[in-house]
Length: 559
Image (tube, rainbow, N blue to C red):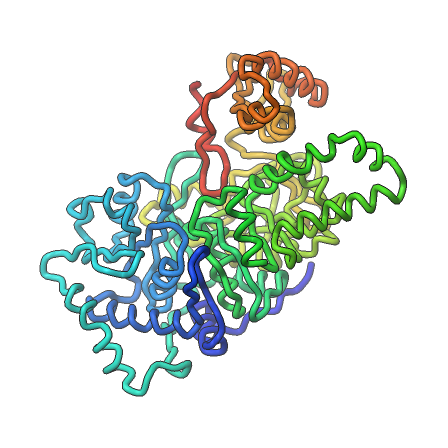
């Protein structure tokens, strides 16, 4: 196992150093706008917020919530909070208003930064502990609690700033909290497949473990570009597009919009990132919409059977994909949900620079990851991190799947104000239960089979992993996504059809039942006898998903 070079600073000190060293370099920007914030600009705004926090009596360890789409102002509010010594509570902007209010209250947040559209849906009277709320649009004040003076502080913030820094604000003025890495830095509320939102207490040490591994493995450099399109309120997108990037002098552009393929391609062309951090769904859509139709063409199909010619065609596919990502991409990191094996196999066959990682919010987020795509083991999730340990709860962890359990630097301290959930997720000897089933090889590569709670035990005693069946079904014609479940001792698949492809080919939706019968027959020819589907039922809408784009299976158990 490789040895990591530890970054010799506390987590907060990483930003103190980076903002000073990269003071004049571009740090963050928003796609579709001309405004670019340098590291110096970010540091100045952080200093202004620190004055605000101090004047309105925010103390170290107090909570500050942020809810809104990815943006530069979202990022600066987050950085100001953690560098002050307070705890940031990032809330997914897709949560409904009741969930947002619950998280603000449960976390004991004293300030709230929110987008204007989200604030319009909230009732300040239902968040009684808040001192006030501030807009993420331009940092104007939404409201202040009676007896607070946020309005007066914000109106005079320029004067207060100038008094504190009479000679101007420069890199030598950047001095942040000296809190130990053992302190909680982020309180991240999960939105998982089981339907229960819990506040994960993430420390500076947890984040440092991820930053160190990213520093050693990904190797971003000063002046590199990143495009952030995963939600920053989730640990996966926040850790690498945002937190890690800003420790290396990288310029991150926030998409701030739903990552539809058309918008993403425009953003990739403009930003031209060196590294792309993505969930599987995006590349699966590219494969299904762009690559599969080309592979189906007779000329291409015949050419791929000709020695040496196939390598040239694969090279063309590789160049086209890299060009679609802006032309400079040297690594694509896939994580957050299971990767379709057919898509993965194709990308590896054309020598596309892709690797797959595995983790969870409770590990901030990494458990396994290997950025060396040339040595990546197909269908694995990379190697277990040097700062982490993994065991498989199985009599034969190399061949028989069992629950993946882990411990190490990245593991959270527990769930906020929820001792019962904390006790339940840890074993008696201190290992974190991931809830995922997997195996590992003798070289430390991890292989995921499915979720423990979604595993189906057949009448003959066979373990059935519905995610594996779904991956095969999703590659069949006119299937956008699917969900396999057990009903009355039979396996049934819910399918949301690909209506766009139907329209493009001129096929009427009335033919869907016949198409799905053919898909069922084709699927049952390639799965084990105990995995055969008895019925495919059409579902009218896309399945509801977590921020990681995993289907919330619990919502469909009674359909």
